[in-house]
Length: 100
Image 1 (cartoon, rainbow, N blue to C red):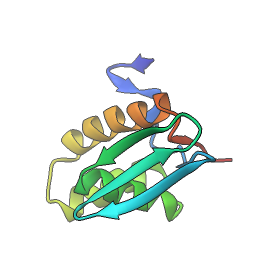
Image 2 (image 1 turned 90 degrees about the vertical axis):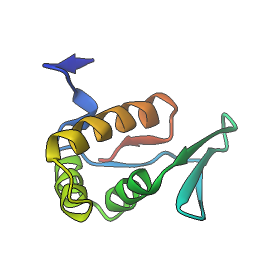
Image 3 (image 1 turned 180 degrees about the vertical axis):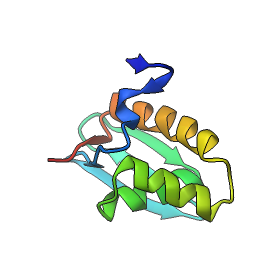
Image 4 (image 1 turned 120 degrees about the horizontal axis):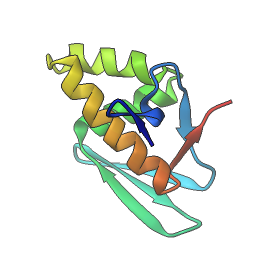
C-alpha cells in the first residue's frame, strides 16, 4: 500500500520493534534476523543494520532516515526510498511490528 509512491510503513511518525520470536545476530558487517516461528531468516547490510538499531533505540522511521542520511552523507530521498522498501519487506516477513 503506497500513497504517492511512499509506503505507509515508512510513515515518518511510526515506531517499529522486532516481532516476538525474532532473534538477531551480528556477523561481520551484517545483522541476521531469524523468525523462530516461521524459521525464516533475513540478512541486513550495514545501512539496514543501522536502521534496525535506531528503531530498537526508539526512533521513529523519519528520525532514523534523517540520521542515516547524515551518517552516510546520502540524499535523504534515496535513504527514504530504500528504508520504505526495507520496512515493507521486514513487515511482510513478520520480522518487525508496529510498536505501541
